[in-house]
Each structure stands twice: as structure tokens, then as C-alpha cells.
Amino acid sequence: MSDNIIDDEVTVTGKRKQRLKEKKCAFPGCGVTFIGRGKAKYCEEHRKAKYRKELYKKNDNDGEAITTIEHDVDYATKITRVCGLEGCEEEYDITLLPKLNEYPNFCPKHRNQYQRNLFSENL
Image (cartoon, rainbow, N blue to C red; front, side, top):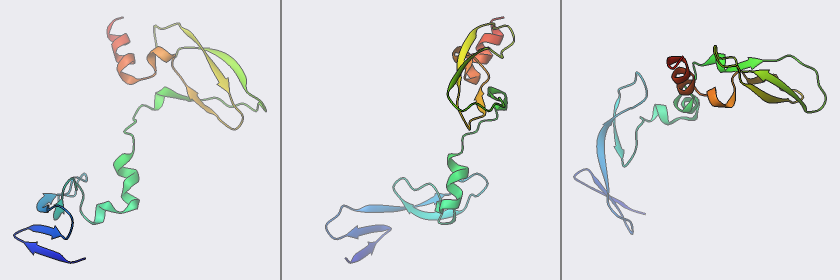
């Protein structure tokens, strides 16, 4: 396969033309300028696998949404809990599973931060 480089364009035999552009790396705090094509967002360094965890990590600063329940059950057991949101007295069921200690702290209506904020505003 032969590549012909003509004025920032790469022509690959049998394929359509791909334009190379000068782009800035979108990785937080990087800002390196690189030559990329199409939807390329990251420089060579930040395309490596070790950075993918940081790129696609959920920004979940919501540690209160999960509670730890210590138990030693050998089979699935259902328990009933009260929603952990102040002002909500709704009960919901949780199934305790062996070797799993993290469970939701809120009822299904208030599992995400938006719904909890909306409920708190309407009190």
C-alpha cells in the first residue's frame, strides 16, 4: 500500500481522501498540539490504554448513594429498608447477595443526584 502526501492530505490507494489537521489534545491538562485525522481527540501519549480509565471514569462524587451492609448470608435474602433521603419515608426492598456488601442507600425514586436535589427543593 503506497501513501501519497499532498498538501496535508493523505491519499491511500483504493480509499477516500483523509485530511490531516492540527488539533489540540482533549485530555484534561494536556493541551499538546498534534496532527490527527477525523475524530482524533487525543495525542499519542493519551491514546495509550493506561489513560483510558481516567478518560472514561465516572465522575461519581456521590459516595452517599451507596451504603455498606456487613452480612454473612449464604443465599439471596430480601430485606426492606427506608430511603436515606431526609424527608422521604418510602420503603424499598434490597436483595442481599453473598460476597456483596455495597447496596443503594436511596429508594428507586431518588437513586440519582438530580432526583434527590429536586426532592430537596420541593420540601
